[in-house]
Length: 85
Image 1: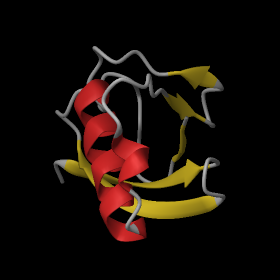
Image 2: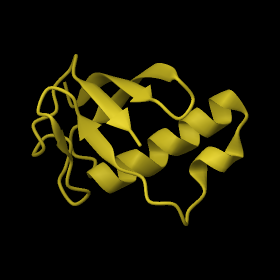
Image 3: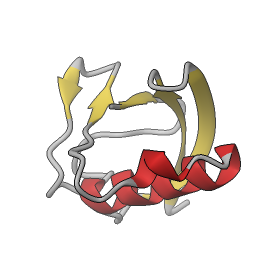
Image 4: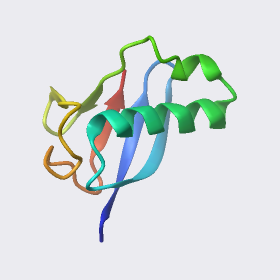
């Protein structure tokens, strides 16, 4: 399978979501797509403002993910929990 199923926590809204993310997608693109999907779902377009820095963290690894890495090279696997800040 070329995608992973992850849980994404978004503390800014106190919500969590499940997403399928392609393994070859870079972390920065994933952040942008996750932000856009959450904003659309929640009808809250403030979430995806371009001028705000957003980061993606891995709970299992306990670290901030490098935006230049791919999902696969960052070691993200199905079942992982990520935090979008």
